[in-house]
Length: 121
Image (cartoon, rainbow, N blue to C red; front, side, top):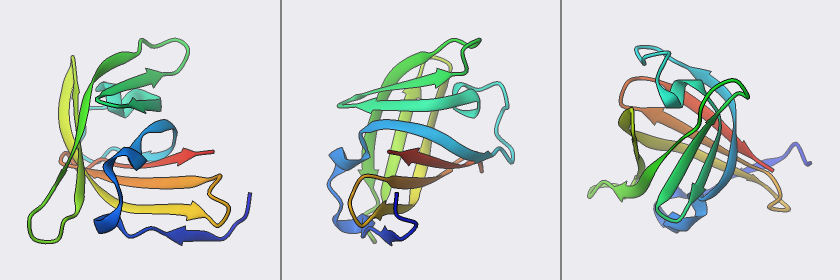
């Protein structure tokens, strides 16, 4: 993997680009419930209309729905997650990719104040 990452313009990014298998690389909980599915997830598998929050081998996974919404002013993308035990929304603050497109980082800021970095390789 190249250490050089390119910032992607979020306003012009197609919604389906957020799909795929993402590993939770880092997380800051702030006010978020530490027992919530997204606070415990080690991976997120995002397919069209469906999200699976996978926990470490000892924890259960939860499957629900997701969607992209955009604010009217700046066209910034928000990811809405609707899981059985948690419904929340996260602003996509940054998306970065390697020059060869084989590695991506997705940074999310949740309404609860939780921050999450997801990696895809």
